[in-house]
Length: 241
Image (cartoon, rainbow, N blue to C red; front, side):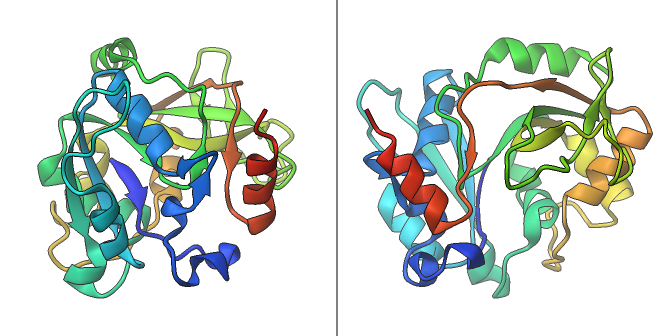
């Protein structure tokens, strides 16, 4: 699942007329980078959620985009804006899409640039065989998030630490694997398929699952950028060699 429903307030005015995931990064739409990487690893059935200017995303990619050196992709859409008039936030959007997702599935934000990240079937198999319900890829804290999001134990478990804890050395990259159980009605309080269109954030669910010892993690040290402002976008495009 590729998350592409946000408004992108900090990216205005660029996002007043273009959804943030469609902004150009090094010659192609920002969200196309993880979509192609997923496809090249064999994950060719992908679902995109949309809200703000979502019709542009569907028009841009269609259902079977063709990209060089990339296997054929089948795209599905969860149009939250059309269905409910607003975005459902991360957890609400994923619950909405669950009936069309596999038992174990990738989630990546369409506004994060991680060109060196490699999605692998082996990672899925390892996670599926574990007792964990989520597996996160974390990155060293960037300048715009010096306090970090989570810690990581020596045994590879993600830690929900207090905000002022020095052990919060890592930022959530947004790249993760989940099991359907993580987003069950028991955990989220939202009926599968989210027919009421309830908006719900992801972070509280992750922290609660970490407290139960159900979230594993690892550090990704390749190129990574949360393309959250026009300045960061300009830096990425200026750094092409």
